[in-house]
Image (cartoon, rainbow, N blue to C red; front, side):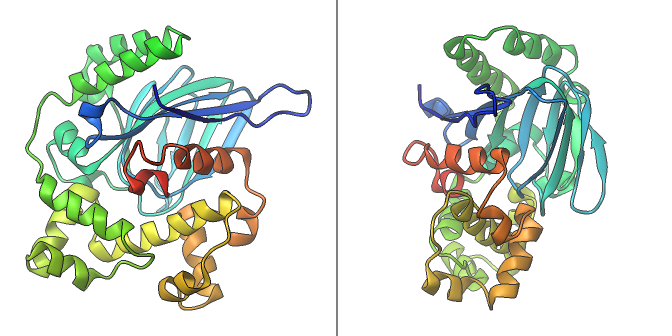
Length: 295
């Protein structure tokens, strides 16, 4: 079991918010980014989530909503699929509640949806609409235990069940794109085109299909969230890398606010949620893709 967790203490020593990350089983490593379990023991949770990959989530108490970068609002449901996001997302939950979820890598998305990721970019749907009553039974099993080991077994098996469609995904292309996104603080689209040996139009079509965004927007998203995650962990940004990635300080501020929901100044004193997310993912380094642990 590979775990990374953060439990910010409350004023009375209790923890109003807990977040734990776990690496997926080896056979799911190219399909799932990580599993995460959160406990929210407060009347209102209202936070910006960074732009991210698709998510599959279960809630014990589904009373809230997601507000996407374009203003689109979707009520939270007991089991929900959230598509890839192109900007910060405001997540609101009236608690207390527990959340169990996992992120989907591009190959996992292809197996789950069998369709273009761009069709659900900045949108969310009720998982029951995809899987019917079976997903309610799976949700009840997952939410019905407090034992971490048992919960992880159930979570990994839920993934195996929902991804059993086994839609083909070009792993060679996904590995090239992931390497391109993590190999430089400022990925350049011509480098990706050259690495794939494809035309720019073909590359754009495939990144939209599997990642939900164009290559240019993908580069902007991961450039910003990687810098934001480092700041939230209290790390000093490399000046040379900053110069390659951002034109100036105002450009850095604009991009991080758009994709992470906070300014660099605010990230110097991050919220419990932002800090727990950034540090929790970082602790999975070596167990998951750098695309996950570094952002």
